[in-house]
Length: 163
Image 1 (spheres, rainbow, N blue to C red):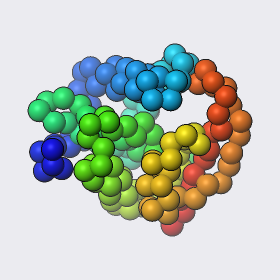
Image 2: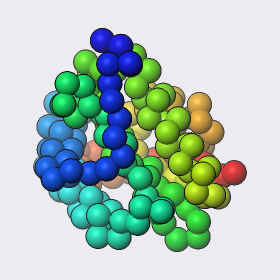
Image 3: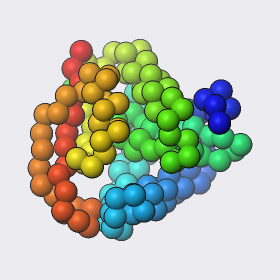
């Protein structure tokens, strides 16, 4: 598998929101033992994203291989010229080939093109590989809080980027 075998589109198609929500629920349950609370959180966030979607401010990146979604990332506009990075996911068999870096490069290019002055994301302490990637792009840990929101004790973390 090579990065050149993967296509990336920036439009949502019918079924995408449900599928990506499902994959978050299933994958995070398998890898991190998150409960249905996490899938519900993702579904609620997607509803919020789509209900205020503005193509001049928001973007999705849907990575596909052989017409199957294998990765996803979105940028959601927030008040005060801020962007939120959400729902970054890569199927396990597609990790380690540069897809995460490619999606982050696309995120950062859109972020700069639209003139955002800050960006943030929420993750958990368990997402070590993703956190390392975020840090390479200049995101810094700004907040931590204990949580049981996803069906088990963990630490939620906020990372911020300012330009």
